[in-house]
Image (cartoon, rainbow, N blue to C red; front, top):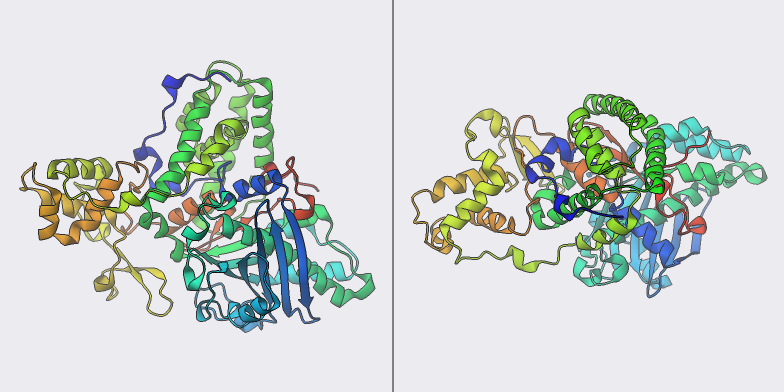
Length: 561
């Protein structure tokens, strides 16, 4: 594995950090679900179900415990008999088919009783530091009923219906990091198994998938009695956990510039390392071709009704055809195969296709890539502090570097400031409104860093270059957040979106997909420009089948007929 270090260059933030490209990212080896699965398999985690007390109406409680080398974590699940008119994926819902918490350790009966009075209430309840996450899920009703009916009658469900939906339940929120009383991130950040971002939440979803499989089989036994059968393992494996994600997630990548930078930089570093390879072995080239073929199968069953995604999927399928034609004439063994492939993709494929290629070329190289996952957390507390001694000239230079595209834009033009982000009074959730049609401007959140950078840059004109920025901020404290972000850019070159987050054309789903791709989500299905459905863990082995051989490439399933 020979590399040419001189050619190891990450792509420019001006290329990577455009919303259209961020909205085309795919999962990769660094995605958080895959990191967790590799960890659990490598460390031979043990899984048990100490409690499954569900009645014939599908109501009750269950506990699933995952035990690693040093600690145990337990998903506590509460199943409910939800009436159809109460089922909603909206954040304003007040009842769900199932509710969950991830408990730090093994709960006592008293813990479960306490949580039974709070977890089903979600935001209206309270959990405490022994809980690491809070979540809820709703059934995909038609598929649920089909699977229960099929298993109850002694037959397997229709695979085409399984693939069309992909999940029996979808979560509508998975909260962690201190929300509603849960443990703060700092409590678990130094644990090796949870040091990579969102590992507790990903474990919660993984165990939720096991509970959903067990629950649907339980309901089939209730309905069919001795005639009922369980899901065939290959069919069960095709089922993931769905997720409905709305605007609440979109501001996250704006509000966490250093953390998001670390995610993007790790991926870009991985791509650069692979592109710097002078040659590829026969085995590495074969691995890439195999994964591409399996990815094609996954893309073939990826459907959406949203016009934007329909167009992107059409382009992606054309990209696959063009990629296969390219590979027919390139054995990927000659000089700099991956750099040449990525250069060709940049010239010939859509952003969807380019980012798929960027993810796939990482697959043959776990030794080059996987360790970067441990660089994706944000432990740089100093980055948040403003350096008041920095000269005005240097701050202006930093603003120009991160926001050069925005400084000449006319921010008074209605199309450039058409939207405003605010927080809803009812649910304290982010919302995006029409600035000129709704009385929301006085409630606007600082989620337009480009506009604010242009305003700060203009305000700095006339200030002496050598003056400390603290003098300016004493007179203009409204620009503190912009100066902070500009100074952060020294350690976070990928921390800023290079697009207008309040324009009349902004698509929040691009921000949602960027974050969800790092979770490891697949089959993005926007339902509007403001919320998206995805699938998680489809194809993943269940705990009883998890091995070091199958813990990783399940995300590219070998579809069975």
